[in-house]
Structures are given as C-alpha cells and as structure tokens.
Image (cartoon, rainbow, N blue to C red; front, side):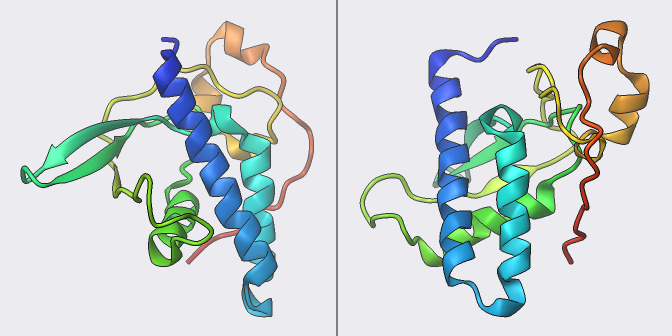
Length: 156
C-alpha cells in the first residue's frame, strides 16, 4: 500500500518534529542525558521519515482525538524510544509555538493495523525485527542490510 499525499505529509511532519525535539534536547540536556539524546538523533537520522510509522486518528470518549499507531512489521519495536521523544514535546512544547497543532496522545498496540509500507533498506541489522528478518520473503532477502555495527541502547 502506498500512502496518499496527506499521509506522506503527516509522516514527514512527524519525523521533522521529532528531529527538532531531539536537536533541542542535544543542546539543552544535562550532561547525564546528553549521550541518550545524541543516540536518539542518530537513530532518527538512520530511520528517516520512511521509518516513521503512520497513525490513524480516532475520537475517544467523544472528546479527545488520539492516534492509533500502525505497526511496522519489519521494524524493531521502538515504542520506548519514540514515546520518550513524543513525551518531551508534550512536556515542554518547546521549540513549538502555542498556536497550531497540539500534541496528541499515541497508542500502540499489537492489535492495531499493520503498515504495508516497504521496509527501509540499508539499516544496520539491529533496526529490523528479529521475527520479520528471519521470515522475510525472497524479494526482501535481496534488500541491502548494512554491515555497520550499531550499539543499541536500552532505555529504562
């Protein structure tokens, strides 16, 4: 499935917003957190906008709009990493203006729809889900996987 123009724009905006948040934290975080934010910046740059999941919006309790994040079967579970970045936006709203789009809660669940977008090629092996990697089809097996050694941080 190919995303329509609006969906592509939303995914690109999500990526750019997350990059702004991470860049801001790299320059303002205390020394004890700087390595984490630099690492998150590298993760986002490697994934690019094609590595960002898309969302389906829904209204919860007839009051609040929430996003249900589509699962990317090929991608390693990045819920903690993306939630950390998204929570930072909700907490500080900096460097974003008070007017305009407001942060919206995202829910991730294994029962939500799975994205049919193709996997991002050329990432280090640790960016791909183990189950997907082992079970990929012939076309996907020909996809370039980087041999770069990438140290994955565990966020707790």
